[in-house]
Amino acid sequence: MKYDRINSSLYVKNRAKFSKKMNSGTLAVFNSNDIYPVSADSTMPFAQHRDILYLSGVDQEESILVIFPDCKSEKHREILFLKETSERIAIWEGEKLTKESAFETSGIRTVYWLDQFPLIFRELMAEAEGIYLNTNEHLRATIETETREARFVKQVKQDYPAHAVYKSAPIMHLLRSIKEPEELELMQHACNITKKGFDRLLHFTKPGVWEYELEAELIHEFIRNKSQGFAYTPIIASGKNACVLHYIENNQQCKDGDVILLDVAAEYANYSSDLSRSIPVNGRYSPRQKDVYNSVLHVKKEAEKLLVPGTMMAEYHKEVGRIMESELVKLKLIDQTDIKNQDPNWPAYKKYFMHGTSHFIGLDTHDVGLWNEPIQAGMVFTCEPGIYIQEEGLGIRIEDNLVVQENGEPFNLMGEIPIEVEEIEDMMNA
Image (cartoon, rainbow, N blue to C red; front, side, top):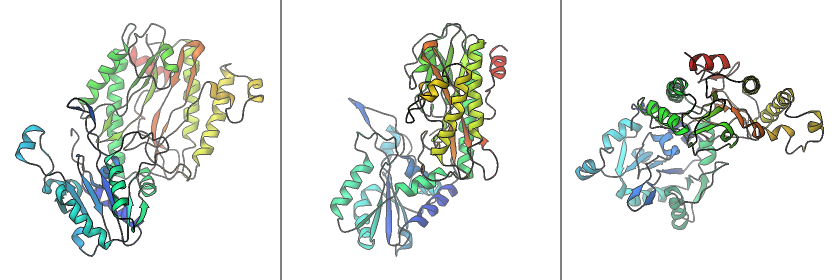
């Protein structure tokens, strides 16, 4: 890992919060992700399962966390199981966690090697009345590959049919959605790295540059600042490409007079940032581009005011739609007739703004959270309205990351990143 060690007190707090939500006499198990094959002997880079990371800080494959608050043996109330390291592994793969460094990372004193898990788990299950199993219940999840967690769930249900089974997901969705101060610091750091990349890009962009060259500038700046790289697949969409919401080819030349929609951001310590900006290739917006940009920016500023405790996200998105509708009328993209005849299930504004405005962000870019509960202080959301005009080959999206405050408007983690038309033009022409 490139990031600095995080104080284990964060993970001690996180486990304590989870334990308080558990039923008496139950244990919970969290598995690391697999290392996924590509072909031949090639593999994807390892990415840790965010739940075991949130609860332990262990950023290593073949790891298992067990939480059993009511266990009669005090030393078995929190256990880590790790792949046993060796001199050969150290030579071929590099340093792995020892039992001592695992304690320093997680604050968990009881650490066993992975080959001891079957026997110890059987002993724990003989004492436990039920088990919390960890399943992916993200609303947008598409799961085609059987995960290490899924294999474990299948095995437990087969081997222990008499045990009560509970879901970890609802607890994790609640806990992970409300960030601790340490988490907000890590997210701020990711946003600061993103700012450095964006500033670099503003000075580099000019007519004739290729989208992938901009991608290269960003990854250079991110990695040199201790990020693993992009928090998600980068979107660098010039001209008409910006009207494809998830354009990721990044293989076209940027032409004089076009706008580039950038949806690009760094991660740090597995925490995501998520930035969108739309900049002119030649350093100056045309009058039409400026009007559309300022309409999107107006919607964003008004939407931010709604991200306060007690807001329901469904109502929030409806209100943002009404604000966007007014801006589209000003831009002469829709009129009152369109609004009068609109389908209530697909309002007229959706022709030019077809995605949602905000999502949870944290350890995942589209982080877990409780969508049908009022938002609370400490939650972090993106705010990303956009207008996409295919007939003009123009797409504008603007996005920042916002921390909901107990009182007042949210705190913008990206408040130092240029966003006004004049700021962007001045930096591009400096």
